[in-house]
Length: 483
Image 1 (cartoon, rainbow, N blue to C red):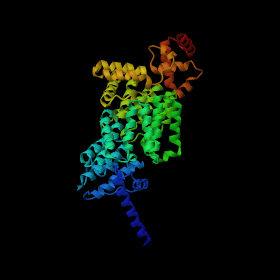
Image 2: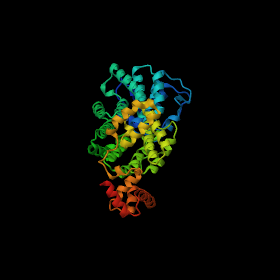
Image 3: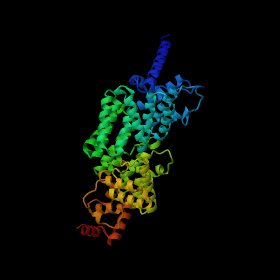
Image 4: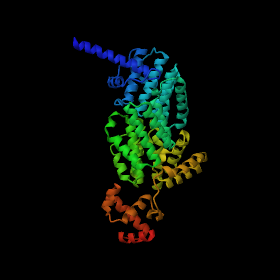
C-alpha cells in the first residue's frame, strides 16, 4: 500500500509540475519553478497519444522547455522527430490554437539548445501563426529571434527582437519574466557587431533580472568574457574562461554556453600567440548537431596560424561539403579559413570561390565581423578585394570589412624576416624564421606538428629559393636579408 500511495503522489507531483510549467513558459504567470524544471528534465518522454489533446500537448511542451533549460539534451533532435514530421505532429491532433503554439515554441526552444537553429526558426514561426495571446506570441518571437541569431541571420533577427521587446513593454508583465532566450539572442547580435559595451550590458541585465538563476548567471559571465575578448582584455578574459570552464558553476550551465566559452578561450590564446596551445585546448571538443558551435572551424583557425594549411583543409572538408544542416554562423568563418589556406597553397580558383561564398553570406545575413576574428588581416583584405572585382555588389560589405579588420584580425607583429621573403609560401616563411634558432629539424617538426620528412622537404625548398646548399649558408643569407 505505501508503494501504491507513493506512485500516486509521484504522478500527482508530475501533473502539477507539467501544468505549472506549461502555464509559465509564456509571461504573465511568473517563472517556472526550478524544482519543476529539474523534475521534468529527468522524466522519460511520453509516447505519442492516438489523438493529441491540450493536456498531452502541455506535457510535451513543458518537457521540451525543461530539457532545454536544464541542459538535458542527451536525446538530441531525435526527441523532436519522435512526435513531429517537420512542424506537423505525426499523430492526429485536436488542439486549441494556444496549446499548439506553446508546443511548437517549446520544441523550437529545445532545438535551439541542441544546436539546430534553422529548424528552430521554422518551429518558432509556426508557433507565431497559432499564437492567439500576446504572451504566447512573445514566447514564439523569442524562440524565433534566438534561432535567427544562433544561425547568424542577424538582419532577420533584428525585427523579431524588436517586436518581442515592444510586446514585452506593452504586456505589463513582471520584469523577472524577461526572456533568457531574447537576451541570449541580443548577445549574439552584439558579438557579431563587435559591440563590447552592449555585450556587457546584456550580461548585467541577465544577472539583474534573473539574480537567483545559476544558469543565467553563468551565461552572463560567459557573455562578459566575450566582451573582454572583443575589447582586447585578453588576460582578464582568459581568466574568466578558465574559471567558468573548470569551476563548480559549470555543473549548472548550458552546453552551448560551455562550447561558446571553449571558442572564446581558443581565440584569446590565438591573440596571445599561443597557437599550439589553442589547438590543444580543442583536441577533444566535438561539435553538436547542426554545428551551432563548429570545433572543426575553430581548430582550423589555429592550424592556419600554425602554417598547417593542408591539415586545416582536411579538418574542415566534411563541414564544407555538408548541405543545409550546417549553421551559417559557423559556416561563414570556416569558408574564410579555407579561402586563405587555398590561396597559400596556390589554388587561387578555390580560394576565390570560398571567399566569395563567405562574403555573400556575410552580406546576406547582416555584415558580421566575428568570422574574421584572429584571421591574418592582410591576407583577408587581399582576398576580399579580389572578390569585389568579380562581385561589385559586395563593395559596401568589403569596405565595412576593411575598416574593421584591424580590430578583429590576428595581431600584426613588427616587421620580421618573413616580411622580406618574397616568393616564399607562408609555411616556408614561418620555417625560415625557425632556421635562425638553435632548434634542430626534429624539434621544429614537433613544434609544427608535422613529420620530420615534411620539414626536410620544406627546408630543401627554402635552400633552393635562397640559392644555398646547407643550413649554415641559409642562416648567413637569411641574416643578410634581415639586415
